Amino acid sequence: MNAYKNLASSYDRLTNDVDYGSWVDFAEAILEREGLHPRTAADLACGTGSAARILAERGYRVTAVDLSEEMLTEAMDKCGDLENLPTFVHQNLAQLRLPRAVDMAVCFLDSLDYILDPADCERAIRRTYRALNPGGIFIFDVNTPEKLQSMDGQVFLDEDDDVYCVWRGEFDEDTNICSYGMDLFQRDGDVWHRSFEEHREYAYSIEQLKTYLKNAGFTHIKVWADREFTAPRDGEQRVWFQARKGVVRSI
Image (cartoon, rainbow, N blue to C red; front, side):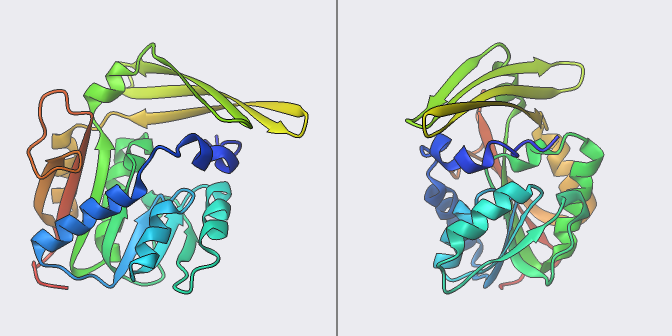
């Protein structure tokens, strides 16, 4: 199932509270602490291109990757007026093959959690390692198992004048997957169109992801609380990872 087939055109309106700049700011704070000055970046699972646009505006040569053709279409429209235009690639992260290696890869907004097969998640991390230049850095965030488990039985509502979305969370302890069933109502003139989508996220543990990173060859792995340079606390909702490829050197 394409989880964004119907949602893509309304995604930005339903997530207008997300401060993408703060995601990029924290990634750049990591770079500053590491003494890195990357020139090229891959935005993995780029969605509608909000972070890719910010990265491009800040001078990075960006390759933006997503599995959803609908989301990539939105991203290309969003970035179409940029002089420093990103390169857009339609790919599954488990089969990632970039046109050229990059200095930095980012994967924001718990996108790795959308890889439901742990073996595919490990493949995606290995592929990311191969896509980086020596000394490159991979930065990403995920929802914690505690957060995804807490979504079980919760009902949420997002709306504006032309979009109305009701979604319900359900966590399956057997599969370790949180499912979000979304009823989406979109207005076209005087007519409302209803559609349904299901989004699912796998609850990866910190130790599980650290193992995948180490197995891929990454070193200097660090885990942070959400956009803070502190260790994750009990009940943390989101955590960030940073990992380096091979010999640590300045880029």
